[in-house]
Length: 60
Length: 462
Image (cartoon, rainbow over the protein chains, first blue to last red):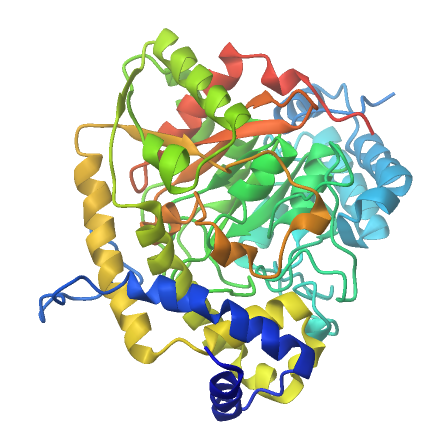
């Protein structure tokens, strides 16, 4: 993620991040992108696949 | 003369027989805190007078024949995200340093009702996520085995205080490994119980759907005693399970014979490769368990990174929602590690979160299938011994997949158990995982392993 892109995203979030920290966050953003890319199966997920319920897991 | 180190069970037996005074035991812990905690930073707040008063009350009750059970008169510490009536509960953060709750957390009230003596509030990573931090109002806790080392987090103060014998047990919370990590690095037994077994009411949240409260102590038996007091249905917590609570301590007597264990070797041999000391200690532990009559067979699960992507996405998204308003208004009142991790969390999309929760269902079902013919699984708790505290980076949580996170995703009971030492004398641990609500089986195996080995006998030289 470029610094300009990060600055736009942080402005949209309304976060006043100190200048020094912005470069570090921009440099680490790929970690989040790599992580979220793992959530989506190749070819997509069955449209009817439900989320896990928060308070009741399937009984083991 | 009170020994420097006692387990909860040992002290409880002595108190019950009136061979140990709760007042003397509590005073001895306060002396140890005064002597050692300047180097360990495990306490944010010592509640000396409150502890003395509670100890006197315990002693009087016991003398009058009103013994409440194995926690009666036992000094414990509370991670400073557990709310305490009239006592500041800060989350180790400037953002909440003046937060004084009106009532105790449900689990704190349960511990007090069981007779435990609260000696103080313990250090944590900021809001159970950001640490070790040097720019928040209190310094980070240090590892008693080597004070230049990291305690693990986020239940850092509990790990340090229990390992140093400043308290006999304590509370932690675990959203991605925050009980099991400090337990591993500080050489303790640390149990993340089944999701919903202990109420989260009155515990500052990190991520609602992943947060687990639980005990850290010297032994599995001590964890069983603490869990017994803390577990139970609480209608005030929407995730609280209305499930029968067994006698966890009695269940320890079952032994390990006949238990079927799946070894998730690829987590720590390929997905987040452990060092040779950890790998060797786990191989040795597996052999010990076979010697106790268990069967150990290898199982394969999805890559560790998949589990961690699911869990960390959920954790960050839920944490961001909790802190969003304060992040906008007072970003730099948070420590740099916490706030910059939250800035990364702000980059997640709503679809990322929903996809993570959909993935969660798949992973829960996957572990259920894998465990269908098993009682337990085991794997590493951490890939190395405790690293130097300065070596822990701001984004370390995202750089190597956490070996503990899969079992937050599934809500399974999971426990760190010590299984050796490095040549340099730092503790090594492995992780035991059970089926949901089979916490007693996890404790039973951990106890059998501890009884069969010598690892519990060694204490840190302070």
